[in-house]
Length: 508
Ligand SMILES: *[C@@H]1O[C@H](CO)[C@@H](O)[C@H](O)[C@H]1NC(C)=O
Ligand SMILES: *[C@@H]1O[C@H](CO)[C@@H](O)[C@H](O)[C@H]1NC(C)=O
Ligand SMILES: *[C@@H]1O[C@H](CO)[C@@H](O)[C@H](O)[C@H]1NC(C)=O
Ligand SMILES: *[C@@H]1O[C@H](CO)[C@@H](O)[C@H](O)[C@H]1NC(C)=O
Ligand SMILES: *[C@@H]1O[C@H](CO)[C@@H](O)[C@H](O)[C@H]1NC(C)=O
Ligand SMILES: *[C@@H]1O[C@H](CO)[C@@H](O)[C@H](O)[C@H]1NC(C)=O
Ligand SMILES: *[C@@H]1O[C@H](CO)[C@@H](O)[C@H](O)[C@H]1NC(C)=O
Ligand SMILES: *[C@@H]1O[C@H](CO)[C@@H](O)[C@H](O)[C@H]1NC(C)=O
Image 1 (cartoon, rainbow, N blue to C red):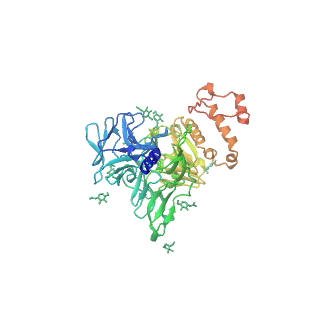
Image 2: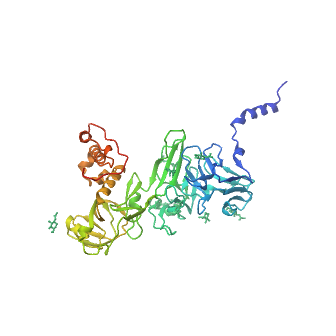
Image 3: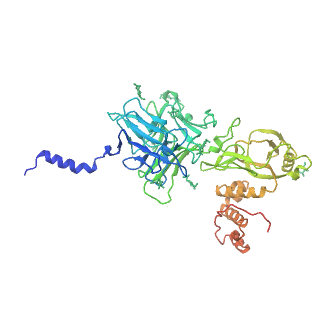
C-alpha cells in the first residue's frame, strides 16, 4: 500500500508528539481546589520547579497560600497571598470563573484574586508566575503583578511597584523594609517606622545613576540572564549592578530580606548535598551604616544594640549587661538586665559598691549625648559616669567624655571606648561572650582595638583567641592541659573552634 501524504503527515506528527510542550497538562480548571491539610497539596509547574498551594509553616499548624521552589530541599517561598495572618488548617482555595478565592475553615473569605473578566483556567508557569487566563489565553491576573519580597527572572516592576520584607527569618508578616520603584522611575529602599506605615527617607536610591530626568526610568527589569536594571523611556538602561556570568543551570531570585538588604541569590539546579542559596550581589554595601539616622529611629538593630556588617550581612549585638528584647529576634533591640537611673540605690552605698564598669572597644553610639566633658582622661570619664546617677553609658574618645541615657541608638563600629555601668560580677562573662561573637563574625580587629600588627598576624591572633576560649570552657573536661595550651599557642597543634558557649570564670 502506497503511503498517502496524509498518513505521512500523521506519522510525522506522531513522532513529534513527545517533543511538543504539553501546556494543557498543567492547567488548572475552574472548580479545582486545594485544602490546607498538611499533605502539601499544590499545583506544580510543568518543569516541577515551582508549586502554588498551601505551604505549612515550620512547626505550626498554620499555612501560607504561596508559591515556592518545589524541586530543591530548601523550599524557599517566592510569593504569598497577603492575608493578615497565616491561615489555619482546613482553609481552602478554589479556582472559579471569577478567579481565586481563599476561605478559612468556617467558609469566611479571607483573600481573593478576582479579575474583572471571566477566568478560563489557571497555570503555574515555569518562571514562578501563577497566572489566570481568559478564553483567549490572555493573562488577566498574575502573581508577578503582586510581588511580596521577591522578584524572579522575567519579572518586571512597573512604576509604583513595590516589595516588602518579611518580619524575620521565619515570620512572613510585613516587616520593616520596603523597596519602591517610584513613579519618578527610581529604585529606592526605605525603612518603615514600624509598626506604623510611615516611611523614613530612602537608605538607598538609584537616583544618582539616573539623574537625567529627560530620560527617566519606566520599569525595573529582572531579565532571563539574571541581570537587574532600570529600563528608561528611551530604551536606555541603568544597571543596578555589574552584569554577572549567569549559569543556565541555576535558579536566581532577588529578595528584599528582613534585614533590609536587597540580595540576588543563586542555587544550582543539580543536587549538591548541603547546598544553600548563595549571595550573588547585594545593596546597600553596609546596611549598618546606611540606616544610621541622627534624628529618629534606632538604626539597623533596634535600640540599645550595635550592628556589625560582614560582607553586607548585618549582625546585631547587645552591650555588656544587656540582652535581646526578643530572644528569637536579634534585630529587635536590647534591654538592660538591671534597673537604671537615679533612685536605684538608697544612697547609703558608694556608687563604686553598687556598680561595676564594663568596657567595649570599637563601638560607638554617636548621637543623643546629654553632656560632653573634657579634656578628660579615661579614668576621669569612668569616674564621672559612675558618680552621675543619670549616666547609663559614657563614650570616651581622644580627650572627650560623652554621657548618655538610654535608649541608645545607631550603635556601630567606630574608634571609641564605650563604658557601661553594670550591676554585680557579670561583666567578665559578657565580655567573653562578646569576644566569642567577634571571633565568630570574623571581626578580630574589634577585639584588639585595631592594633595593626595584631590584625596583620591574623592567624596567630585567631589561635590565641581560640585557645583562650578553650581554657574557660565551663565543663572542666573540655579544658586543655597546660602542656596542650603551650602547643596550641605555639602553633604545634591545630586549635579547633569551640562549639559550646558556656564559660567558667572561677580562678581555679
Ligand atoms: C510535606 O513536605 C515536607 C517538607 O518537604 C515533608 O517533610 C513532609 O513529609 C511532606 N508531607 C507529606 C504528607 O507529604
Ligand atoms: C524549624 O524549626 C526547628 C526547630 O524549632 C529549627 O531548628 C529549624 O531551624 C526551623 N527551620 C526553619 C527553616 O525555620
Ligand atoms: C493585599 O494587597 C492588595 C492589593 O495590593 C491590597 O488592596 C490589600 O489591602 C492587601 N491586603 C493586606 C491584608 O495587606
Ligand atoms: C479590567 O481590568 C483591566 C486591568 O486590570 C483594566 O485595564 C480594564 O479597564 C478593566 N475593565 C473593566 C470593564 O473594568
Ligand atoms: C510575626 O510578627 C508579627 C509582628 O511582630 C506578630 O504580630 C506576629 O504574631 C508574628 N507571628 C508569629 C507566628 O510569630
Ligand atoms: C539628558 O538627556 C538628553 C536627551 O537624551 C541629552 O540631550 C542631555 O545631554 C542629557 N543631559 C545630561 C546631563 O546627560
Ligand atoms: C549588561 O547587560 C545589559 C542588559 O542585559 C547589556 O545591555 C549590557 O551590554 C551588558 N553590559 C556588559 C558590560 O556586559
Ligand atoms: C587622669 O587625670 C587625673 C586628674 O587630672 C589625674 O589625677 C590622673 O593621674 C590621670 N590618670 C591617668 C591614668 O592619666
